[in-house]
Length: 353
Image (cartoon, rainbow, N blue to C red; front, side):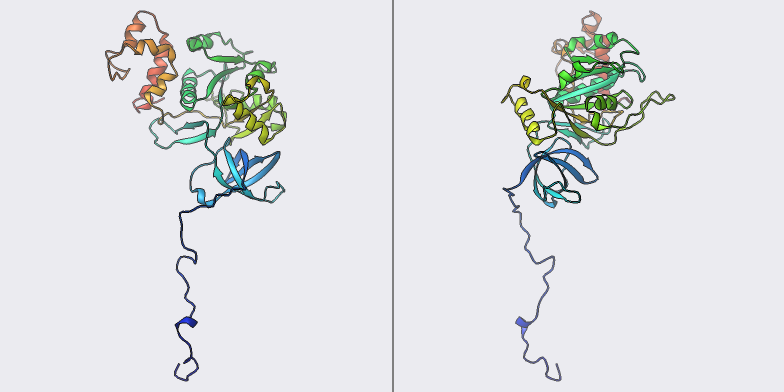
């Protein structure tokens, strides 16, 4: 300064503000060795309800996890406040390796996969026998998704007091598919038996009675129950988000661990008298853009022998396909072949569902 007040100051006395923050950027991430494992039971607007021990903890996702999705059924590692007290918030710092992933796309040409549920081992395909009418093609799509995800499918036919299940069961008899039939205000012991020792995801269109089943199996769930639109014949959406619920035992992370151990064969599944169900929002379509033609064929093992006679690189849609020869000889169920070919055509974007 001209008046001499700052003549004794040099560059070491001047504080320089670093650009972009004072800490250097690094690829290293904390290991969080002391993090506790939890089971994601619900997801709602960026908040994750997690079961840690026998406590329900609300958590957010750590920034270092990026944009990867966390879904119901995930096993995650958490740090922070794990007390479960109102107003507290933990942090998810790691997602453990998944044993299964159920995906779908918005439609058959959409390249974006949407993960619905993780770590389930059974898909319960819920469909009504009437009001609304059954949709075999939707069932076929669910079967394809189940086989692709490595889930055991179970067909659950509801409202048998309104219609007989025989015709629909005849269609799937060649698959050896497990099934249960229920009726309104009927006994659910057969369904409950199939759910024990498993983590099951319930999938089905709106209006088929899925939420009603959940409320009967887990009365404290109080899932919203809808009805069927008399104009469109379709159910109205009631459940808006997936939620995991225990059957036959109090909610605890230990029960989930034992179910995973049963799936891996480390303990006998018959020893477990409880299970978990994951109720999903009703869906009207099940896009299969992520599924290969071989995955589609896996859902139709009754067609295996016929397809083995097809020429190399057969599309199964045009001339020369051995499926037509087997159909002409009456050795295949026409409805099954029609469903298989419709799925193939729809997956290629050649046919509206």
